[in-house]
Length: 489
Ligand SMILES: [Fe+2]
Ligand SMILES: [Fe+2]
Figure 1 (tube, rainbow, N blue to C red):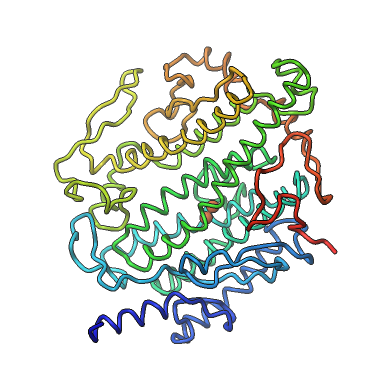
Figure 2: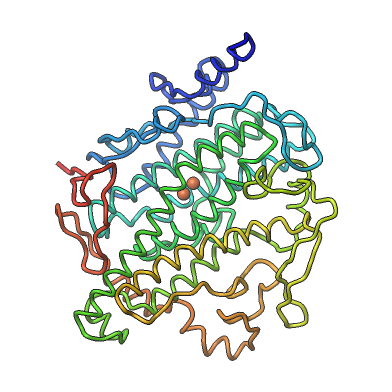
């Protein structure tokens, strides 16, 4: 290896291991920057206070089988062991640097990636980081009471794992704010602990993160559909020309995969159990299925409709000059930007966009630059369909004719061109009276929610699971599903 190559190699190795001997575990050489270290150490107690007040209820004082990253290398990630939850070591982990990394899109394409914030992009970059950062503690707040009704120890452990990782995602964004945005960054970091999900005075920034997650069916839907929005936002930010943001998001994506897995397999297990109950009661009638103690398929479809639509809203306006600016400035790319085969500047290409015009839904070509939000949503919709297909596979294997579908992307929207317009799940624009008449068949009613709520009972005995959900096929880290993942002692 020639001299400069060797030096780069040594630097990359240094950055892959995480130093756990420090108060804030990190792989960013925090001890080499005393001011930053002190600033983050003074934010840390506020974070712990927030976790104790608004983090998972009744999660203190017992051992949970959690994974903790010890290195950002592939094999350093899945390090499992029993941890008492408030003692979880939240830290700052960035993916290894690529020392030759270039900006791959926008007006700065081909220039070296920025290691510092370019002055002219300071405000939009901060806004992107704050908006992402705000969702992380929000989801912990939304889920904080679910431990009281967990269907099994396995599920309780997964809930806690996701909670600590969303907490770590907050740390990831707070690090960027503290390290690169001076005093306003520190103020924004404080605000991330002051806004709260559903708070009337200081709500979270995005609508979906102020909705409650009242039961475990909603929770699996959230982790399937809303964490998947997170995946696409993080993937777009992982392309950023601002290298610390890109590397932070690359590592966050490795954690996000588990969250979506919990959602996808969670819903699959509910479907599995419902199929079993339909056999037991010799009926597919929703009423009989409910009497048999399972969630009927129509109710599940309504939950899918709700959570899908709340999540597609998160991608923003179909035509967006803000998104165009983020893209041409090199701040936020497209999904898998570097693998796309085009000019990566979008100067004169077009993209087909769904729009509502004169009461009709049309697909119209727009400058691709202003349509990057919609393009990301297209990727998301395609990806969301995969779970639907897998759940339908369970129905098929039980000889059930019912099939789940994704609603039309304009159904029940509150953001974008179809906001305020009534669109059926099949994509027809309908009148207000039709909407009122049908809404109960399309979205969870108060009665559906009360029924699902009535199934939620805490099951924490070893080897036991709630009657409305099937056990998982596999456990965590090669353990059986009924392993003692949580030890109350
Ligand atoms: Fe997250
Ligand atoms: Fe997540």
